Length: 461
Image (cartoon, rainbow, N blue to C red; front, side):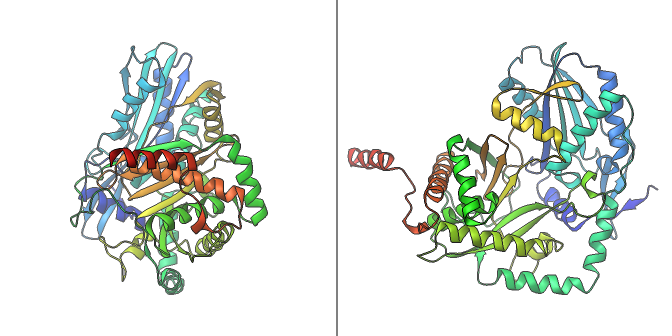
């Protein structure tokens, strides 16, 4: 019998969610690149096998045992490269349709494994490479590490060397932490940190079902923050003595306060747990959701909201080792009353993620780029929809900032999310204009847009 491996606490939570809704694509994670030029299919297969051999978590099969869910490492052959001819798909929109279809197909974690790859061939010199995996074995950073390893292996025709550490090292580290005296300190911190606040929630278009969903239904709406606003936001963050992320987060918390009327609430912040020697190149589920409290009064300014957000992030990061899944299982929380219903995060690739950094910047400019001797271009397809009521991802490059709002379609219509995102841009503009301005006084719509809305109301009356 093959040896079994322990799961992290986060993996155990994802296994539970998978069993609850096995056909849902909400926890499928993918990355796709369009590659211009000739591509050798067999060479790509060999490269994929080398990458899968390097990261054993990718060839995992999951099973229930008397000790609970366990991971079994299978042969590299469990991760297949499928090939699909799509001669009529000449633009990114058409190719994205095929990527979405492949990425949304459910995984059979107990039978077929948690990872698969696809080669779309639009022409002899035009391909798309897609790597898709269930969140239980990956995260967004891992997907780009995979593609990076794959392209580099293809370029050199050499299998990548084994990493210094693996996912089992991460699991052991978590077990050691939670088995130590430090656990009680972490529990006490999170109880005190979150006290007096409840999960943020916005008025929805439909009531929340009291029953667990069979599928996590979701969609995505996104917009590019006006380019002329970016330098002003960065300058405002510098004046306030906070990071740009803190300003973006504090302004989003301001938006939630204005829309919900809540003064004390919690928002989740998914954050990487890749710390320690050798962990940056490890593939797996290395994410924890920090729960951040926000507190507003009638006089809270944008600068104060940003400063508070930064302080809360710094405090929470010192206690990141306590898994969100454990916090959610403790009083006063439950599946119907979780610590967080909304999430906010930022993707800002740096020098340690060269492939992601290059394709993100190229996408912002509407071009492709070069990596490992290949011309590559990002194919951006919505994913991980419906995990939260609303989950915001801010994607930053050198020249752009994209706001991605993923939302539960069981609760919200697209028009509602569109208006919410529009109001967020309005509040970002207000924050850039005057950090000392009170959040409560900022307009959520422009004056001319308000006139249009009022005239519509008069006409309908």
